Length: 330
Image (cartoon, rainbow, N blue to C red; front, side, top):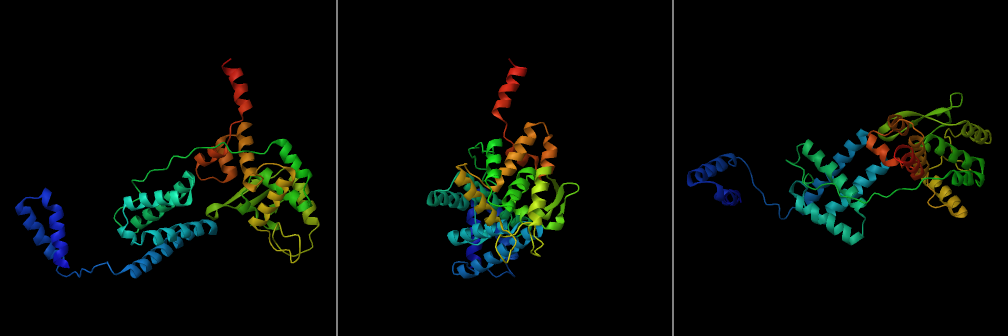
């Protein structure tokens, strides 16, 4: 097996070496491989899978240390599991063309959007870059796979009328307080469900939230939110420290899915399109920039690491574009 490998290397290099160089290459290879055992990997699929799983777990552990959410960790895990199952190759044997074919076949098989494929590409890029940094591979095979161009859609925000309609039709004071705090702070729904009563400072109308990467930041709410939140807490007789809990006993901490379902049902009953928690965040960012709030302050308010992310949330109001055109160009 060792001599076969040496001959194969010599054959691969034959076109760029003269006879003397080929002889020297053979001598160097025989010297370097003298104390090395060379084993065929043809029948080692099971051990490859085990090694792949080990590397995957190490990567996920590193991501946990970095502060990635459980939801992100699960997404990374399922993406890598699918790659392992499909390619059936050790990570250090995977080449760029393997990944190009994999992404192409995944898109066809699952009728996936360009955005989904680019999300997978980003995860693979993060993983193989980590393998490279940890010296498990020489070079990431994802380097030559560039960002997939996606069609940028102008995402909707809530109109003033829609927000008031949602508020007026809440079935309980808890739901009203949830809508108010989401719309006035722009916090993520994942941050909302982690809040405890003690995190809220009613005097200064602010609260400390734990954002992505386990980073704390202060968000602010308006007087209406303060009033409705206090009214809701005054109806509570449970001892759960959570800011928002289920309506029925044993009054457990409200989870993301519970808030999403509540808002979705409310939206459907009022025939308001796409009512979900993140839309409140986008609405706040859009209005803040639209009213002249510096983009750096909006970035701080939303807890974005990169200002480019903040710009993606901001949608320029078309009426303001028209007014600006009249003011500056007409």
